[in-house]
Image 1: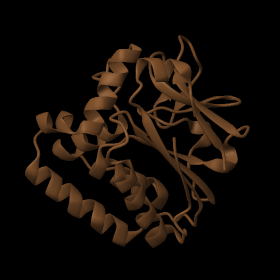
Image 2: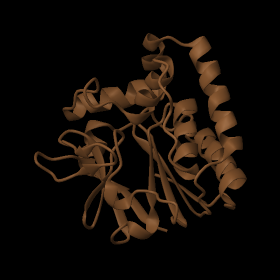
Image 3: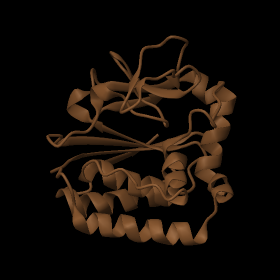
Image 4: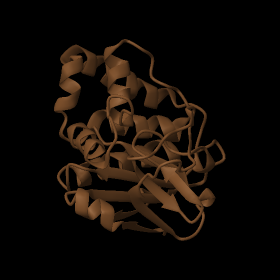
Length: 220
């Protein structure tokens, strides 16, 4: 399994950070109707019980936004992915349908408030990922976003550069239909509370929809 470490700059500026990684072999598919029944059911429930101003009351989303500010990024311009997904629901915009792996990540993110990185582990360079803070002019191509200014964003880097931020993962390591080795990183800027439950929920979805055994879990 890939080693994951947290840089000193993160530890100093945000000592409450805690993360969880799930590594597993999967069988990805273009679409799961059963999964989308769950997604649509929860989206309907969420829309009926929340307003836009309620999104920031989620502890995981609130903490991620505050970490952005601490690191020097405006969370209203570069929203964490979990917040962006919840806003789509409340603005009555359709959720993205990508493939089963990406769709189940988005469901976990919506339900928990965690911004979750999802990667094709075979595309990661080297054996270590380090969580740090983006630098000025650091090259980064966000999935579906083009060149992204990651200065001030928390970013996971492999030996070739950045691969994941809470706003967008990188094109280089993105999940595709042919992905068989899957790495998920659940980012707890709100601390350890809630992380085990999020891990267990994602594992249950992976077992149900990707023929995974649940995978190996590391808390860091």
